[in-house]
Length: 376
Image 1: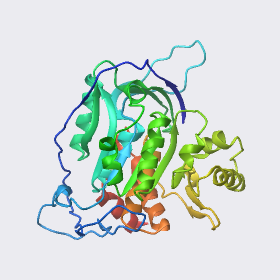
Image 2: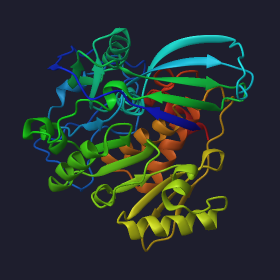
Image 3: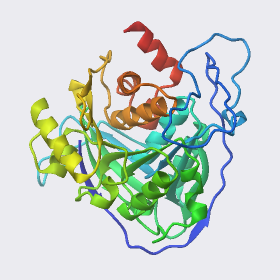
């Protein structure tokens, strides 16, 4: 995946918007264990179980479990403008697209939608413009059960958007316009802004919002004992050491790892050498997404944990696969699963994701993921 990023000027007016939440309903309800008086920490949280039990009663809304530390995603929200093409245009060339449509996306919104789709309490912290694209995104997240209490509306800046050029083999190239994602964040986040972060079970970050914001969020989470996962996807810029030093798990794909370390990542041995450089930069755990070759988790001083892909019946669109993998891994992690179980759960979710077009529309529900795991 290739990405180019553009950002508008930093001028706007802020106002906080409250959105009602529509909770998802699953055909096969998943029973949650309610543990009282839980506090965020690095300890395992045994909350929503991976097991499915058939029941004739409707699923209890997630809001019944106020003491369950949520998944908190701080990041971007984009309107993804999809165009289906046979090939990428050459320099100076104009080509026609087969079809075009606009869907809700952005790495942050994608990961939040995935967390909620997997029936885990999820908050999204981000910014959108007061425009049609902002409405498209907030409605998609609200309908998926994501809590939007921490979403800000910017009156003078457009919602971030992307142009996704989708080719027949499911591969894509992406151009990003930062919009509200990159504008008008306060230089210093208030304690009120960071309250939801300190009460989280796990925090997910990406690089489609300013590094300054990510650093403050990660530091607040670390001070409260909340694990932080940083997805490397987003801006193509040097990684601030100050950010890596407060991240628990860093998750790049092969190309992102190569850019960060200035090292080749063509072989697994080379990937391991690049990861060692990441360890020296301050991050102890590196979760590398390897595309068709699966994934690998490198924990400093330990043997790498490898996970092969779970083959998809067909590949229509890989746009949201990485976000699905990262979010599913985070959900399994906060539920107290082993790292091996987390990677297997994430692989199953990603396998289902690539079989549907669009990012948020492709996010699988928990029942589907567990069913796939039972059949492979």
